[in-house]
Amino acid sequence: MSAVAEPAPSATPAATRRRPGIAAIYGWELRKLRAQKRTYLGFGMAALVPILFVVALALRGGGPNDVPFGRYVRETGLAIPPVLLIFGSIWLFPLIVALVAGDIVANEDGNGTLKTILTRSVDRHQVFLAKALAALTYAVAALVLFAGVGLLLGGLRYGLNPLTSLSGTKIPVGRALGLMAAALGAYLLPVIAVASIALLLSTVTRNSAAAIVGTLMISLLLQLIGVISGLEAIKPYLLSTQFDAWQGLLREPADWAPIARATWVCALYALPALAAGLTVFVRRDVAGG
Amino acid sequence: MSEADGHPIEARGLVKRYGHVTAVDRVDLTVEAGCVYGYLGPNGAGKTTSLRMLLGLIRPDEGVARLFGRDPLEQGAAALDGVAGFVEAPRFYPYLSGRRNLELMAALDGGDAGDRIDGALETVDLTDRQGDKVKGYSHGMKQRLGIAAALLRAPRLLLLDEPTTGLDPAGMRDMRVLVRRLADEGMTVLLSSHLMGEVEELCDRVAIVRSGRVIYEGALDALLRSTGQRYRLRTTDDERALAVCRAQAGVTEALGAGEGITFAAEQERTVADLSVALVEAGAAITALVPAAASLEELFFRLTEGDGLVDAASGGNGVVPEKAIR
Image (cartoon, rainbow over the protein chains, first blue to last red):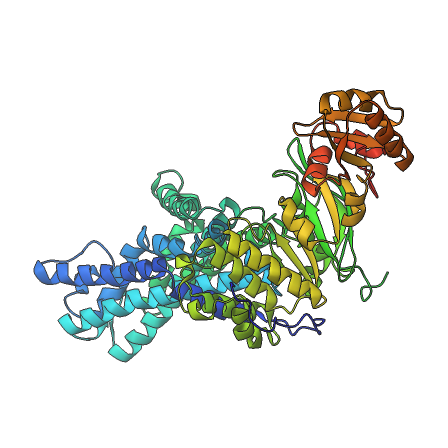
């Protein structure tokens, strides 16, 4: 600015401004995610675990026979993604999701950029919804990557043969792939709930590390409650239990009951968390930075 | 007053408390269109908190703030149409380039804000560095990028919170030139600062805040004129002259001030009489000039000690246009 250029942008009255919609804000949230290292850390974990799993299978005999589909992993690559989904539900996917959802608001607090975007022409609820959508998009991408890498490597190593269902019947490859896609959709239900909790913690704590660790702790706590004897009655309503609901789709005939329950149980976790996060975000003071 | 003809800034009874601390205490503020308004106070006086309330970033515990007649808390982003600026240091995404940051801001502004990016970068002389990531920018470059981001909104009102803090002397000068130029183009500017020279150079009106309260509000030149009754005196015998001053009817606050004497006198006739008395006492006058206090001097009088009492009394210190108890 040592030589001030000509001329300054106008000081004319701002005409009725055409405001950006949520789609525009969402687009920029995705661009921001694309430019951040933690996004790739999450994607890296989502890709690395299937690689390690298939390499471990290839290097030693046997398989994870004590989990559903575990005994079939050497028969068909289609069995790899279901086993990965079971392993991933314990801490991996909550962590991958929390890495971004727990950071997406708190990061703006830490950088002081929340005040920057909240003094533009967007309302707070738009920003929050765009962030929620971006976190969800990231979770979907990570899940697809997780299952896709497992399927690809499993298919290359063991071939794509018919999958043995949990009922013992053979499912043709084409149908099995369709059911896997549906299973990922069902798996996404608790993932969305975890992301919603992470988003709430990100908004309330204003601290990325606290939100990420907090989400992981909640996830692990719910799993712990699920294995405590005497608390079996509440197990169907725990978030951790819903990570198994997709297995109903890989029975013949399909068991829709766990899917239906997962839908409303996950909604019970996700919607209050999102509503609370939105309320806090809209009403909070932006005093930092 | 309708929204269309509302003042650029109108705040009434703004209060913000943090626990037992009242950061902003019943602040009233009216900034007229076209004015460069100085919001002056020491660190911790509540300037930034006030600006945050004006922009709707924080909620006042009491009172209301309107920009062009619109309340940011009720109307959200719509209330900020025609308004831009930054609070404390402008912040950007460090992992994006300067230009990408501006593109993001423009996307969040909507309309034709994107068309102004090149002009804004040129105005703040960042065209050559627009492709660099912001994490590599100096403090001054971030300040300039903050101005560029504000200009994307084609604002009628610009709120700047200590925009020259941390800049080197050349950067401070350039920032002031830019602010002056924007004001000359008709932009209303609220400039929060604790730098007296900056305010004195740029502002038409000032509000001085202390401990969250506005203790003076009015035209800057009126504030500076209000000290016209003070004089500086040098003689061939200052010791004798000081005694004469203290004995002279109508002369008050006569002080030996290192090199020379300062005193206050309400009437010009008193000064004439004093001149005669000094000559008769054998202290020949070598210099006798009105001593208008600098803004800095007035600021310290108002913000330290019991300056407010002096101000409100209309004594020999400041005679404020609107001193507020």
